[in-house]
Length: 135
Image 1 (cartoon, rainbow, N blue to C red):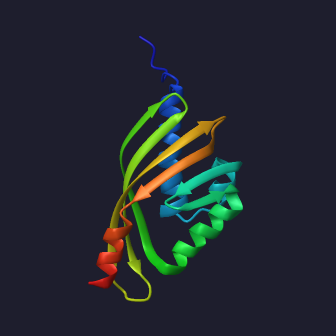
Image 2: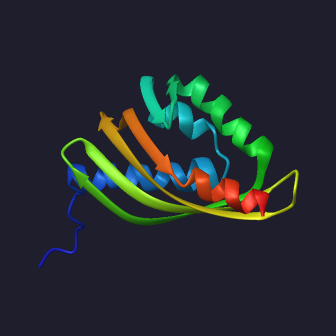
Image 3: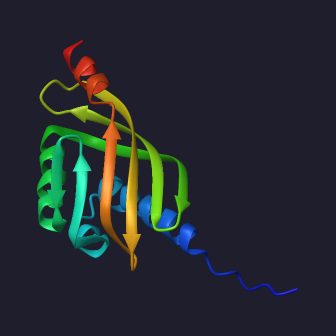
C-alpha cells in the first residue's frame, strides 16, 4: 500500500481555489491573491454590477472594507463540475458607521481556467443586510 497522496482531481482543485479566495482575500485581506487568481479578462457579475479584471475587483473589495470592518467569511458546502465551482458562504462583519454587527449569506459560482477565475456570479442577501442596518 502506497502512502503517497493521490493528486487532486480538477474539480477538487477548483473547489480549493474558491475556498482559498475567501480565506486569503476576505479573511486575511491579502489583495495580492486577487491578481494571482482573478484573470485580467475575468468578469464578476455582482447583482447589477459587472466587475471586470483585478483592478476593478480591488476597488470593489476596498469599498466594502471602507464600509465594514472585522470581516470574516465562513465557507460552507462547495460543489464542482467541469470548469465550474460553487461555494455557499456566510459573512459576519461590523458596519463602521453604525457599529452594528451584520451577517449575510451568499453563493458564488466561478468558472476556472488554468488555475484562474475567468467568470463569476455572486448572489447574497442584500435585503437582509439592509434590514439589519436599518433596525
